[in-house]
Length: 257
Image (cartoon, rainbow, N blue to C red; front, top):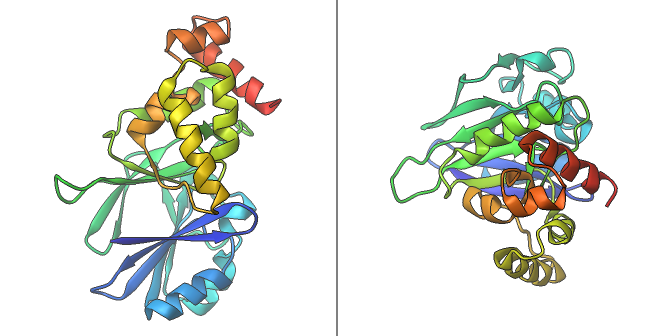
């Protein structure tokens, strides 16, 4: 499975999964149809699936037009998003499986950003390869999504599912927010030397208009404050020893940043 990153809108990424042997493709969270259609034409591939993580318009905006071009494709989304994702056909719950070519992914139910948010985890096919996590707006590189429909407890539970994945897992999040996220992270985790190094690297990359996605779970666990609610320095920064309250206060601080 090859993964192509398609930048759209102001800071969104659409991810195109491509099976070169079968000449088929799937897309994760198509905000727009036209860039996807262009890539499919270049590859000479047929679109067979849309994997939506949640119902927000910058994740499902291309669904209707894509199904007009490829009427046999299947549109996946969370069971609790029924009625909110255009064209949704398959309604997924925690632990369900999805297949693309030879790859079988596991569905993770990760409410918090929205009440129905899901993620797709494709484990590695070989021991020396990383797995791939398509996490929508739940986890960002250096950050996490705002809590529009969920609670801090839900979001911590959801993010903890990601923390438990192998550290080599690539994190394909849906927005290019890394630089601003790390600027905030430094305000609450200033003694984290790896975070400082990461910030400098990201600053250079973005100055050259390079993408910072994918990240990986190990790097996020070491430098993303929203996966570090049980670290004493972050608890000190939020004046709380309770993990849920620590997370909630960090999220509140980021909302005002």
